[in-house]
Length: 209
Image 1 (cartoon, helix red, strand yellow):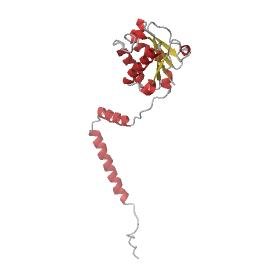
Image 2 (cartoon, rainbow, N blue to C red):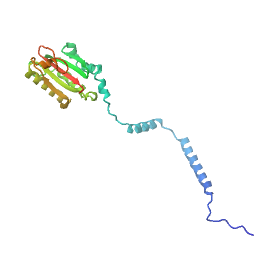
Image 3 (cartoon, rainbow, N blue to C red):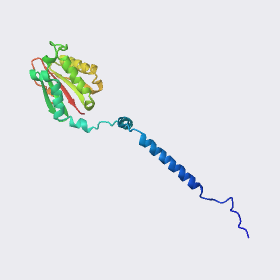
Image 4 (cartoon, rainbow, N blue to C red):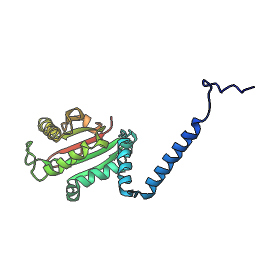
């Protein structure tokens, strides 16, 4: 009696031998390539840095940064900006609960009784405006108060507000206020009394709303 031939339609595992040999050859080939290759660490570092920079996310500075600047730090920044005038005694910088009060002798800013600014003070006020434009200062409002003689004080306050606006501080952050000697509000306005001065006083109130 003869054995029946194998069913040609049956499934066998003979292909695994060929597949295993092919994978072994590929593995050996890649190991050989790796063994003769040179690893460029500088190039790898450049690629890693490039990939990392693409994944960076710019984060907004939290409001707490501005809160920190309501203390001694903002006073030191403003005083440092106006240091020549501080040394000359023509400006006083005081800390307020929500900002800083900068009190100028009007004669140190204006040349004569009008609104013409002294040339030597303009660079200092320009630097002050630069500080006010910085990101951590943009939440602060700037009120410019002037006294006495209501008409002259008003013109001076407006002139300084326009100057700061021209320097990029922004009109939406600026306010000009004038007071007369006879006005009782001089004793109760925000920031305290302006005080007396030979040619009047000018006060910058830099505060968070």
